Amino acid sequence: MKKYFQFEELGTNFRTEFIAGLTTFLAMAYILFVNPQTLAQTGMDQGAVFTATALAAAIGSLIMGIVAKYPVALAPGMGLNAFFTYTVVIGFGIPWQTALAGVLVSGVVLVILTLTRIREVIINAIPNNLKLAVGAGIGLFIAFIGLINSEIVVNNDATLVGIGNLSSPTVLLAIFGLIISIILLTIGVRAAIFYGMILTSIVGMIFGIIDHPKGIHDIVGNVPSLSSTFGQAFNHLGDIFTLQMLGVILTFMFVDFFDTAGTLVAVASQAGIMKEGKLPRAGRALTSDSAATVVGAVLGTSSTTSYVESSAGVAVGGKSGFTAVVTAAFFLLALLFSPLLNIVTSQVTAPALIIVGVLMATNLKDIEWNKIEVAVPAFFTVLMMPLTYSIATGIAVGFIFYPITMVVKGRIKEVHPIMWFLAIVFILYLFI
Image 1 (cartoon, rainbow, N blue to C red):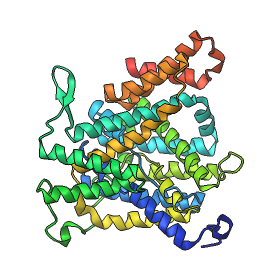
Image 2 (image 1 turned 90 degrees about the horizontal axis):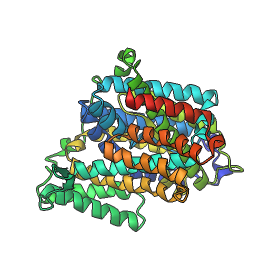
Image 3 (image 1 turned 180 degrees about the horizontal axis):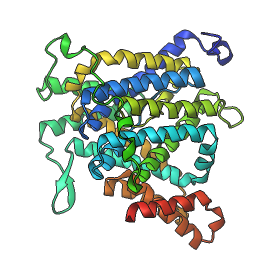
Image 4 (image 1 turned 90 degrees about the vertical axis):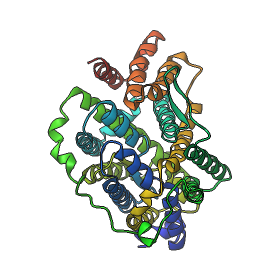
């Protein structure tokens, strides 16, 4: 094992890699509760999604660790699960089974594009400013969802949205969770989101807002069945041949593009495994990520992607693929704790959504706002996601405006043909 994972060459050891894997798991364990709650709003069985989430994370992390040998863990992605639920199923009225088929197809296409190296061409064709805008926009959208789920922000007939009832015990619990998570994050606690959820749950139980466990069976239990979600994607492949589903699949792919590329570069740089500015075994890493999406879709969850929280494990010394293997083992162990879904309520998970939104919105600082031809499409990409409650619409509007502003500015030669194609696709997507 030491030889396979190159412990000596990388200057690491079993103990360091184990601690790194545990740290990464704790930093991203919140997805075990956030993802089932999010996807359950589509009508999917929450227990089945919990199992699918844990297994997709475990299998994806194992593939990444063993095949690509990267200290990067995977799980169903934040933003992608929001798009799946709020835009595709709730917004478009597409059955969740068909949405899973879309995820499956996006994963298969990504595998093919990666193996043929077309994926790299597409990534390079999309301007960096738009990539940053997509990430930031998704962050604002996720934070908006968190504020709504916690009822800190509510519907207002006069102004569309307004502040909620801040004297409500459940709202106060969510506010406490947000504050304590921010404090933990600010002082540098690696698993701040996860620990924030634990503390919020405890406080909720103390004040009677959340039901407390009445026995060990309320903490540890049988693994929920996957029967209601497993293989549903295959059964509905015939329903994806519409223009609307084409836009959905493209969006799944784009977001996965950006998430994976950005995460792999960031974590690899931090771990010191970048060579002359290039990712070693990049093909294997990208293929591992795409394969994980396929596996997750079959099991019954939205797109699985590389997690930037892997940087928490790297920060404590993780450098090899064994870090991801350890993380995978903890996700498998987590399968036994499904009863906690009854304790981790939306007031507990809402702060996690808001904090993740904050972290994703940091992309805004790197956008070239001083160039109007860049600022306009970037601004509309970011703005339209929360305002239309749709990640796809935000991407579509931004990608349509980009070639327009670039042409007017006299920079038409800098617009890649792929961007023209995408602009046309999104025009059809929005108006037809």
